[in-house]
Image (cartoon, rainbow, N blue to C red; front, side, top):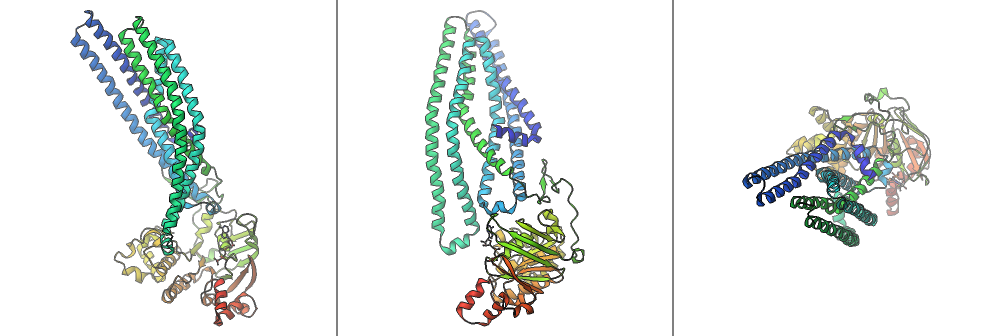
Length: 618
Ligand SMILES: Nc1ncnc2c1ncn2[C@@H]1O[C@H](COP(=O)(O)OP(=O)(O)OP(=O)(O)O)[C@@H](O)[C@H]1O
């Protein structure tokens, strides 16, 4: 229950709702407790009237029936208002917890996502938060008033005839204890089930988002089988879990039935003895019915409490992961749903830096004795020393797996070097707020990484406030305007998830337009390769050439024509820099670049194959 209390504390801003719900619960309990008393007095009055004492029968009937109606209406209205508050509170809680979870994910280091399936992260978020909010909402809509009623019933019974209260006092903790015994095992099964569901959800997400690949390999049946296997496993786990739960429930409920049997015996006996009036008996029977309610609900309460506890544990597991200390410019949600821009130390974020190249320090980028290992042990990069001057174009060449992309990831601050330091625009990537640094960088990747939405929204992704004229101008420079104009909705055309409705070359040009509009002085470029045909390649290349003008550009090059046009080439081998020099210097040095030039001249299949290993397409 500590985790539930933690959730309540974490959502302390909802206290007016908690208070309102508590007041409604007390009032509902008062209303429902008054009803048995009205019935008791009505019974006694009717009995007296039948025996020829007391007031006229018609008056009795109307008085008590009227009172009964008033009490019931009171309870109904109050409990419905409480229910309304509970619904709003539940939704607010859900929105608060979800926003914080999203915020957390945006603030976690990239390395967290290297080990997680995206779908699992989403599935976990949905389940944890849904279960926590469901429990707290049910708690406020039902459980609270039931608990208050139960305590009141115990007190009233104690006043009337203490052995009845004593029996109830025995059965409640016994029932709770027996349920607690069952719940520990239940939780283990639940965790296993959730693991299967998360894995299936993760894969589901991956498969659906890459359905073209799945279809092209014809692996639908295999994917479906794996998915089904996970869910079949959850069914067999549920069988064990439910069998255990219901078997134990037989014991619990039997104990309860025996205690209630004893209580009825006592009530009837006391009535026959003349210690209880008929009205008292009616009151006691009603109170017992009320007392049995929470017990009957207990299984359900504990069931949903367990789910909520498991959910909140998962939630806090993620929430307590350390943030990437440099992610300060990630927007932080507030209770009211507004967004604050804050830095890690809580200060307002600095105004974005000027996008002009002149404002950059020289060298713009430095790698100083950098080493890096993804797992902290196996070095992927070692002894990297490099300084890139303002306005320089540098191409990185090396065998596949040589560390080119990793180098770019370090540059973007996605990972922190294991040794040494990387500086970009004067910021140390290990310690600087990433938002500031990334203001200075524009990127175009092989996979254009677009989002669902319109073409205009995608071009303006980095500058949502850009005018339509600016967007069109960027598209023109990126050779995108012509094809965009051919779409019926032009810049307002929807492009589908990750730009699915666009061709590879079109996506690339939108990505270039996006970088042009961002107008950052540093450019990181992973050249598109065979995804494009010759014509598309030419228009994309033209756009890229235009984009690179006046910017410090780092290129993972896949074309010899690009490599020959840069200021310097850096060749990488097994995670180390092998050579650095101008194209003409390296053309004859006997290193990787000169080898590439030779391979290009050769027509043999083996040489072509070797060229491919360097990711070079021509
Ligand atoms: N997220 C990651 N976690 C663990 N290891 C990784 C990760 N990304 C890359 N690696 C490993 O790091 C090494 C360098 O990979 P990197 O992607 O930087 O090479 P590359 O030169 O860009 O290759 P390519 O030209 O094929 O894209 C490879 O051995 C790769 O397996």
